Figure: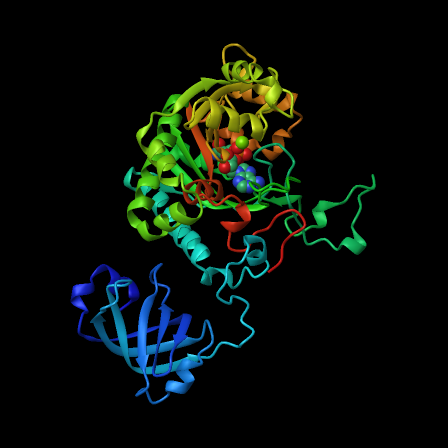
Length: 461
Ligand code: 4AD
Ligand code: MG
């Protein structure tokens, strides 16, 4: 069957032909003897205008169609005399496939994003969210395409894990134990041997550790899947459930890693601009007028590279501008990240070589013994969208670091094995899909780029 997308993209082929379109009513305007319906069939961002006249057998029913009713229209596609749209479908027959009730909450007026979150099941029918979620799909495809074209193997890492990949303890526990009757051992601790897996398990915070093991077999791998964090951060950039892309490359160092990240971002942004042009026009017109300029800047600029130490120097010069303190050893807050990328460099910035104390246990120790080969990529408007590192491939140094941090070797024995059997230098990073999508669409709240967001105190739907 022909879609509205076909009609917009290849109009000549359908002009003056009989066609049939099935979709949902977005608007209805009626005068005495004729009317217009804007119909959307989900194939395309734009609506098709249907014109109907009094001679339609069910003119009355059609004239009183409620918003979001499902219809099938048969008729001829005509070049339209009106300047507003180049063509319209002149209806010979309109079948009502599903009438929408009159209390449909999305009547034709502007709604706030806050309100639309309360009807997350209906919001994909609005222009904004139809654009967001189509771009999310196109972007996901572009990410796969980028890695697949370069010979990366897609690895499905587990959702339920027995280890903490970030060592940060921000995990959602998975358990079958009965909370009203928790089994206890002699010491009074919860006895997880009675649990489904016979041990404590959690939802994954990152597929990195598992994907590293596959990296040592395939050399270039990536994961792309749901990730869970029980971070108590109620911000526009944090979700408890988000999607992360994690490539990992062997025989590679931090520079190779940064080059990969830069190439990937440029590729996927270009791909979305080319393959979702109507949606991107919409964002640039209605969400963020500087969007195209910003994305052009990303595609055409060389990303900046600075060390953490240099970043601290830059921030110390502007100390009075910040709410939170800056100083060597302290982690960067969002306000600091945004200053560096938005005010100071005005483009994406990699910050490398962070103090080991503020980064994860697996990052490779630098020769100064104080910093690790970490990289964060900051972008204007969002802050951190990528976190990554070169990994510690030296067994003794890794074991020592794990001991210092109190990580149990028995939980990570397989991860340590990788260092024993042909372990070589390797690196990788994690990109938050939602953070990237916010950046590409200009949407400013992570809750508006996830279909059914899970955030602090909020898991409706
Ligand atoms: O910096 P993070 O914590 O790095 C890792 O998890 C590494 N294991 C990745 C790796 O090297 N393979 O997270 C990576 C990215 C962040 O830069 C951010 O884009 C996103 O994941 N992210 C979140 N996005 C939304 N909500 C949250 N709560 C997020 N936490 C991290
Ligand atoms: Mg990070």
